[in-house]
Each structure stands twice: as C-alpha cells, then as structure tokens.
Length: 95
Image 1 (tube, rainbow, N blue to C red):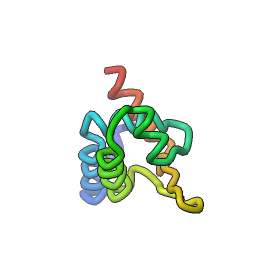
Image 2 (tube, rainbow, N blue to C red):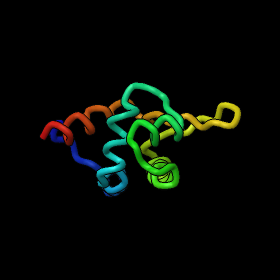
Image 3 (cartoon, rainbow, N blue to C red):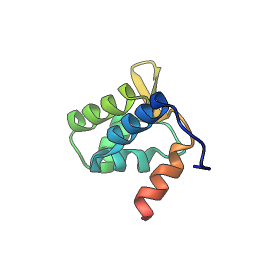
C-alpha cells in the first residue's frame, strides 16, 4: 500500500479475504486457477483431491468474495473476482 489510510470497513474486508485464503488447499486452488476459469472437476482432478473437499473450499472462497462462480449449463466455472489477487498469491507463494 502507498501509505493511504484505510477505513475500518476496508480493513475488515481485507482481513476477511485473507482469512478465506489462509488454508493450504485454498492457496493451491487460487494458484491453479490464476488467469483462467476452471470447474470443480478440473480443479479436483488437477489437485488430486476429493470432489467434496474442493467444493467445500470453493464455497468458502466464493462466499467471502474471493472467487466468482459462473454457471454454464450444469457446470460452474470459478475465476478470481479481482485480478489483483494474483499479486497476493504470487507474494504468499514466493515469500
């Protein structure tokens, strides 16, 4: 940040987003879908996890405003709600 003062609401929202992302599986999901849209099947197959586990974590990320879920027929495709999240994932995976 550039030294700007954040409101209590902005601080709370930022903390909620970071809390939502603060799990190894969620970091893996975020890193995997960076820059693309993927459905739950693609994600759980790529991460070699159970579908129910991935669905649970996707639900948390979507509910907290980290991911978007766009329905296309029977599938829901997940992507970043805000492309700036790529910087957060890059930072936490490289630090």
